[in-house]
Image (tube, rainbow, N blue to C red):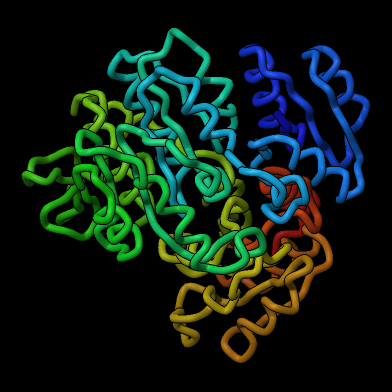
Length: 438
């Protein structure tokens, strides 16, 4: 069976297939010495780099190929055969109950929070999938009571039987159009989280999001909703309530209380309780949960300014969520666009005194950021992260924040969003050390 790509997911897939006696051929566009060494240790064939025609012919000789999540659906090896994702393969080889989480924004946080709730309840639990550990790797463990799986649109697009007992769809906004081709393909991929559920399963959806709610209603699972609906898990007068109106906990008990934090807390509680996790375990996890790095993370306070790293925000929707909870700020945005309408960041914000004082445009998408904000707010361009931090600091007013919330991927300047966020934090530290604050 061909496995396309040999990074972390590809290696996990190859190892799992080989362990089940499947003859594996790995197709990789740019294999390095480490990849060849790993393949040899697994006893699998590694072929590449290959001309497109050869890759397609190799894949066509088999009924199924398993691509790594980042491999384009237009790759010759994918176009030549039936494609299943690593998540689909993990589902097929696992006997552990699964709770799955998807959404355009917030899925890693909610996945981590649900896993914490399960651990508080004394369950043997692992978080897997798009969060880091490939599902096919975690699925082979025999010591688990529950797998909490973060699933991306890439992974869901390649599923045919994946049917988690509890499926959570947080929200929908345009993303990954450079991979999916159009918004409808992206929407259909996300909706697959509910596609194979049966009457005994649970579909958890955002009552304030018509797309997620509509997808859940088309499935067979029992519907549970959160956010903005009197019948669901909701926030009322600073209290998180369940569908019966009973108190889960007061919002002030959470470590952070931005609007999206409250929605994430409701979604996680709805999902955990649907999986049979008790209320007290949910409360303990909510009170003790520490927000994940690079998600509106405070990384410095200098000269009366606060500096926030929101490098994980790679879509306009994620930027808007951060702006809703941050107050007046100078926004640093840009990077490599994923085929999205970056004017969505500015649309609806109040140019006459809203949360954005000014914008610093960075990366390949800097001209698009300039166009999106031109005439609404002052816009400056920066060629490095150090320059972006310095310019944003100069533009900020007393008590403002400087917010790195790019709305774009990081791959023009950085290896990933974490490296970008770390570089932002470094630039803030060095600015302080150099005495360059305002």
